Length: 195
Image (cartoon, rainbow, N blue to C red):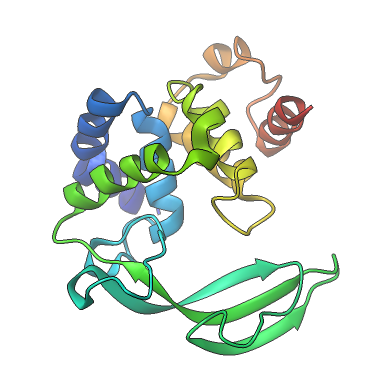
């Protein structure tokens, strides 16, 4: 697994740094979200690293129909997705839906990274997140709160990956507003930020 992680960083860090320089969005957040959404770059069809949905009227060159999992508060409505494969009621009362939906497509990873950053600026619901865009952890929490993904653990997953990319030692990490370098600490950080 570590080879996949290092290969991912080597391959996409420069694109993430270029976007950070242009927009102020932390490259650590960009890398973490790209890794999470694309399975470390292993599942990025047509250079789609971030799972950004396309509109139904996007051109064929700019969209693709892909299988995805959505966590919804109610079963999907007829016509909400191009295809509904399965719906399962979860123990928390939400619905895990396997569906096909339209996603954006790109000519290159760099084009995807740049468009993804602009997505935050073009959508007003991310205004609060953009105010903290230089801090990858706070940005991750704010993006999740704004509804980027349907996964209720999305912020925690991003924060875990950010901490991995930050390559901090235990003592450096202890100086942050997180008490221990483990999953529990990341969750405590996210919980405190949400208060």
